[in-house]
Length: 112
Image: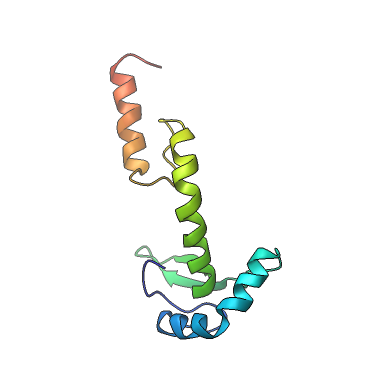
């Protein structure tokens, strides 16, 4: 859980996570091992955009964010090396800006 963002649909905050896990760790592990864990629905909110529009966000519960991060920490080192060097979406240390620079570089080298 990278930041202390908003609570999800269950209302649990980041500060409540550790006490919750101390009390419910075993049942959570059992659910995960048995494939019976069900993520909670995401909390849908809208935040204002500078142009006056609204940006829709889905906020998972802190438990689901923690589990997503744990899964990411295991899978990313396994799969990251297998991805194309020209793939930039949702990759560590890569962004749309990197993709644009790469495309510009290819264009300048004569690729079309």
